[in-house]
Image 1 (cartoon, rainbow, N blue to C red):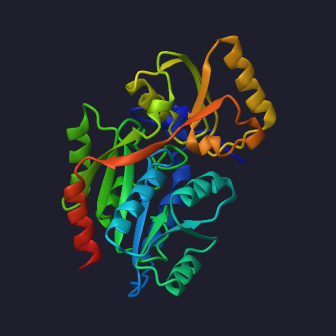
Image 2: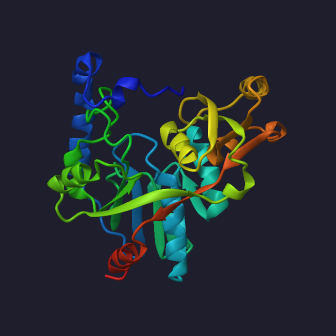
Length: 314
């Protein structure tokens, strides 16, 4: 079952419902506490990297994984991506397979074992920070500066998988979509971990020349942070006249797509969605639907590359 993220999760502070749900955050806190007690051995054969999040969904995790894969390949390393299998995450797996070689399994330990057999130098996990059975060499936390930490509360009162003090365990942060309050966010991160590295990132559109931005557009998506998708289009001067939002990892039926196409004709607008959503639509329904192809760009690539080298070759 796919649920839509509650709106009160992203209020600047918790509302009444969030505080009513606070007792239900106790199992999450206890689970995190006991997970942190687990100690796992370092893998001496492969450098294990994890890019994950604390805020649930929509932080730019998967594009960051693809970008890091490409960077490590340029260093002439044998690199692979590890992705734990969830049926609802087929869209992310397909996206990763298009851009890289991916090892998929229901167990991260088995993914590592397969990587060892393939003599992989570096294995990048897409998600898995909360899996303490794996001892990672580098751990990245992704944030979107617009959605940031929402109301700052744990699931189900808010959107956080862990409390912010978990930042003390991690090595670096990818902070996407910098805005006016960036100093406040950086100071908050550093208050939990003064040594953590912070790298600002942004999305760039790789197929922008395909679109006539003077036309009217109907946009739709079923992702963790639809505001980020719309914001990128608006930044590039697309004329958006209507938006349809579905839950994250939504599976589209023919009825859904027929409705979108019918609505676009009614308002005389072209249709555009994300690449992840496009891959979830049946190929016979692709006609008249375009997708945005994006990639993550790290603002200070030289500093980032030096950081990665210091961790990989230590």
